Image 1 (cartoon, rainbow, N blue to C red):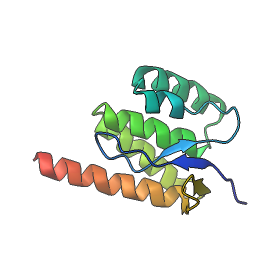
Image 2: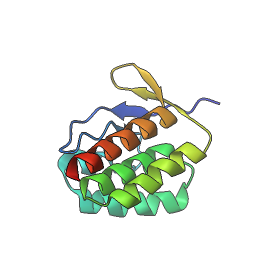
Image 3: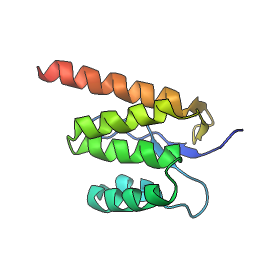
Length: 119
């Protein structure tokens, strides 16, 4: 089953690989993240994940918020959670398709590089 999400590539301070932007009126924190309102984004994402715990866009975006806030352990745990679940195809606004697993893997690699460069 293919679950399509609109994804927006975002260049944040920590080079988070992508922000998920679900089609329609879904509240997945992407607008708040783009505005830099990470506190509101976190609140929205935590609330929405209670309702939709299997939605990869919510998990990826919450991980990006945690990554931006320096909460690396929590971000890493969420990216790994995406990898433990069945994969979902995601459509980027650039008309490229990636899987949630690809995005989580890229994010984990960037987290590791960031951690190594800090040491």
